[in-house]
Image 1: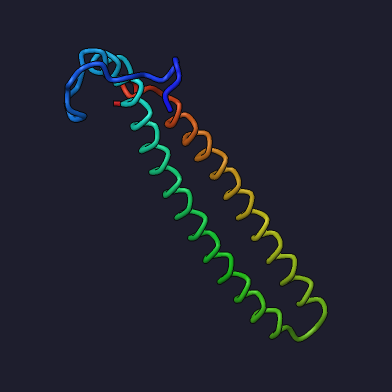
Image 2: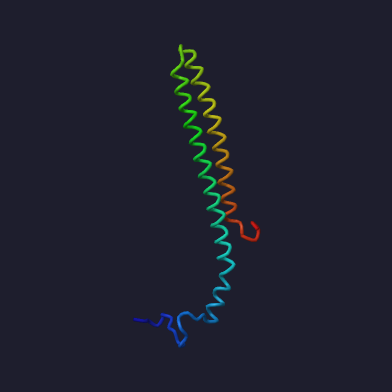
Length: 122
């Protein structure tokens, strides 16, 4: 049941006709909608690229871990084992550090792209 605050249709216009007030309202929000749509598209593109990067890094690390296990299992003495472990850890640490730095930069770029108005990004 309508209340005093419920908007009522006072004309015989069909539901598909647009009133001047509706045109004015859409005209007022259209720039904001365009900016939001552009920001969402930019964000989704960046997130997709970020996911690809994470997937590629994970694959390369999995392969490196598998290779390290093979290498460690072929060691003949404790000194060789320690050397292989040290080399593995140094390489892994460097790769994770580089990946973390890359992810930080991509995340910052993603946030910038999502928050910059469409006119500036174009």
